[in-house]
Image (cartoon, rainbow, N blue to C red; front, side):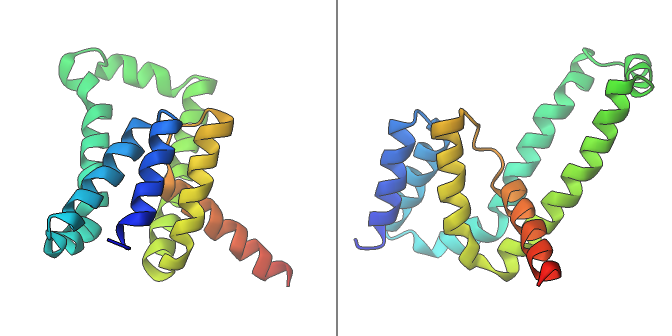
Length: 150
């Protein structure tokens, strides 16, 4: 039951900040613990990000399947200044996400701080909680800069 307290706090923060994803995720993990389904937690921990990224990628690719984005419109959008910035943003984002995934794998002790930061960003800045890995990537870059300065 003591393991459920942090999850209960995160759930309440999710409810209070109207962050349905955070509330649902913390509730599901908390219920898994309460129903003695802990044996599935390592699988969720190991594969959860992959499954989440799978569905996120599917949602981004769905406009191609529905015909909302065509090969012609894709090509035309890539040669505009905004399209070129989008390519650069995609490259930077994927680099930061890679750094973030490495950081949470090697230094899981940063996860609570990242979660608190994400919750504060949602609460005070009106952000959306889809970026804990990106937040970890930014943390990794900031930590590297701090080490470089020292």
